[in-house]
Length: 168
Image 1 (tube, helix red, strand yellow):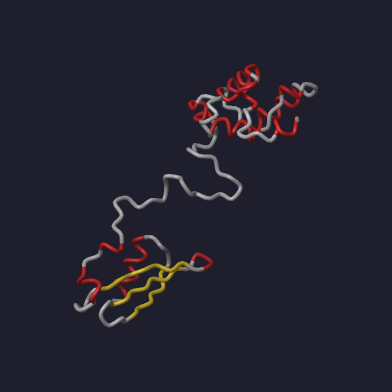
Image 2 (cartoon, helix red, strand yellow):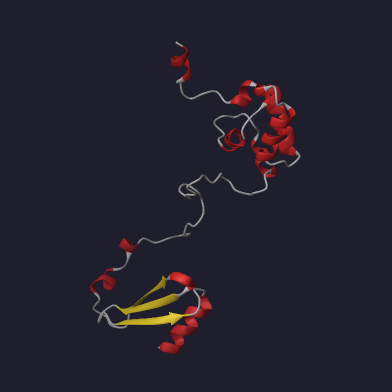
């Protein structure tokens, strides 16, 4: 019977069940202690009382997963990293509001005259980055499909524009 109760999900958060522990963790976070420091301090301070010990992951989850509603959101500002979300082991950025192109226009919305390639003189460019911080710019003339490859020193705007001016 005990096994059936232990497999129930979602499990209640440890900090929601122990108000004294929650207040201690919130107090240390307000003093700008890291969750790892708090976890270590609790382990050494309450080495015989396991109910007063908590892992740093549980503290992070209580901060970043607001569905738990255990620790106040303002305590995130006391963490040393200024992230809006915690990075996991795989370090994916899916769902994070960064790296997004503002006012992006889809390639499917290009005008028809670009698609038919009837007018010569239209060029498309791209940047290829290789190993060891090496870069190459490509220019393709749309009508004739003529390709130019230009080695560039860096991927910043000035390096690319300077190399293109020199080759054209």
